Length: 441
Image (cartoon, rainbow, N blue to C red; front, side, top):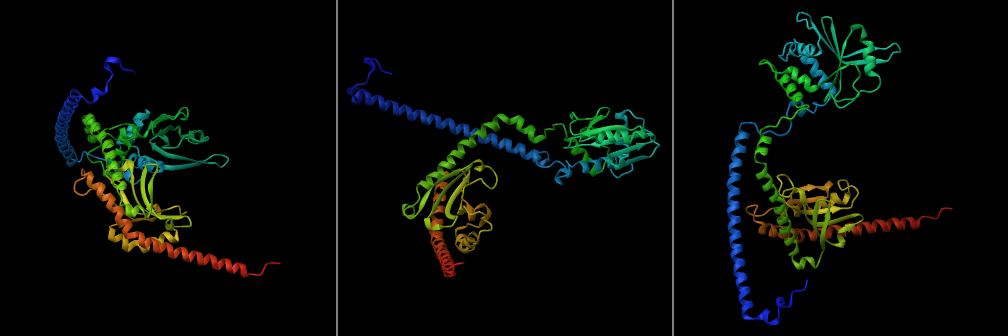
């Protein structure tokens, strides 16, 4: 865009006293605005910190009362059997037997018969059979998951959890238990199985949980655990932790967005440290950045630190999604890295390097070793003092890499030199041996 003639700057405009005064005025106003913004920011941060303290106290109260829960809900889930059909059928058979030690009496079996519209004789014995088997005329075995008999009534249950009906199994069940005029129940997770056989009553595992409620005061711990497991099927029950988030989600999401900005600052601090590595070290090394998936890596190496497919480096790395998240990947880490070998955990040279470098790595505080992941020895690099002191993170990252190079480059040179010479001698001896063999006629 071209300015009108009366608006175009001239040489005199650029350097005249009025322009200089205008610039000074602008700079003064800019400083005033910067100070004003800094004051606003400090006040906002102060309000945030006060609000954080309030929410921290609220979460502490919820946790102290045992209402802030995470992980597995029931013992069946902990044991990994909450979704195993055979185990669930065994639990169902247990609570259907009035005399077993669940403490529910005939509540569940009576409720089931009421739900199916069947008469329930409280004086009649309740017989429950798991995996009752009968055979067709051609000898085909057919197994009913669960059969319940009370008085003259019979209920056959085909239970499914993650599977669906297959073949003519249900048709065979109807035919083989026809002599008892049985009522057939198709028990699934959600009751939405479109393969449910015609004439069968469809129930869900959650329906079974409803038959157990309300739990009697004398209900055993096992019965309560089974009920709580079934109660989690097909419904959503927000706990106090979820309700806490829903109450404060706007504030929480505002703070969560700060993490993205903080991660950028952390990455910038680390990059600044690597950009200021001692030039004397860089003069002796090959160095640079690599990015792979969510991992960013800075490495120092030498051509001599490669033998065959295996390459060794002094490296600093971080996992982007893991930065500033509570857990093992909160901060960058520095160590001796190897790669390109087919199987690092089984590679002879990888094991040799790990053993020979241990005494030197320990002096650096590099006490962790994960050969299979390509890290012979390593440690996390954190800010000194509080986590917010990113200037110290720049310095500690730079020092960690420089110290690693100064401590380990010599031993790495020696190990690779010896291994290279030995490999060359072995190859030479093998070639000489082959050359000495008489040609085959």
